[in-house]
Image 1 (tube, chains in turn blue, purple):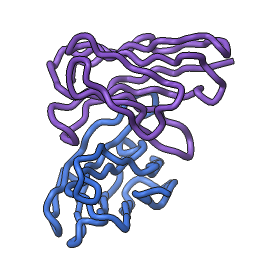
Image 2 (spheres, one colour; image 1 turned 60 degrees about the vertical axis):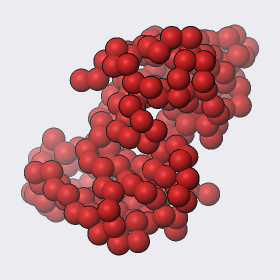
Image 3 (cartoon, chains in turn purple, yellow; image 1 turned 45 degrees about the vertical axis):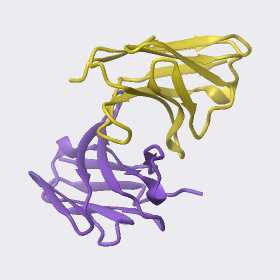
Length: 113
Length: 112
C-alpha cells in the first residue's frame, strides 16, 4: 500500500505553461517535504510545509499543505526547461509517530522549449 | 552543498558476492540513511542510523546490513548480492529525524 500517492506520474508540457502536481494520502503527516531530483543526482529539498493550510512560495513554485495535513500540491507558473526533473513529496511523522520519511513515487516533469 | 560522498559511484558485481557501499559525511549530522530507488517504487528506506553503533531497519532491509563505527561513515553491505538488488542506492543525512535530508549522488549497482 502506497501511503503517499503522487499524480500525475508523468507530465510533458511546453515552456510557459502552468502545472500542478498532487501528493495525496489518507493518513495525517506532521509535515511534508518536496524534493526535486535531476538525472544522475540525488534529491534536493525545495520546501517543508508544517501547518495545515500553509502556503509557501519559491519564485514560480507555490506549495500548499492541505488543511487536514493529508495532502499537498505543487503549482508551477510559467514553467521553464530548467524545471525539468523528478518531483518527490515525502511525509514525516506518519500517523503521529516518529517514523521515518515516507516518499511518494514521484512526478516526472519534462518542459519543452 | 552538504558534504556527503558515496563510493563507488558505479559497480557491477556477480550474483552471490558480498558488496559494500560507503557513505561519508563531513557535516557531523546525527542521522544517516540508506535508500534504494527503483522505477515504479520510488525511494524506499533500507536502514538508518541515529548515532554511532545505533541502527534500525527500514522498509526493505532483507538481504542488507549496515554499520556505523564513526559519526562520519555509514556502510551498507549486501551479504550475498542478488539480481533483485540491482538498483540505485542513495545515502542521506539529516540533523534530526525527518528534518531536511541531504542526499548523496547515488551508487548505481548492477548484479549480473
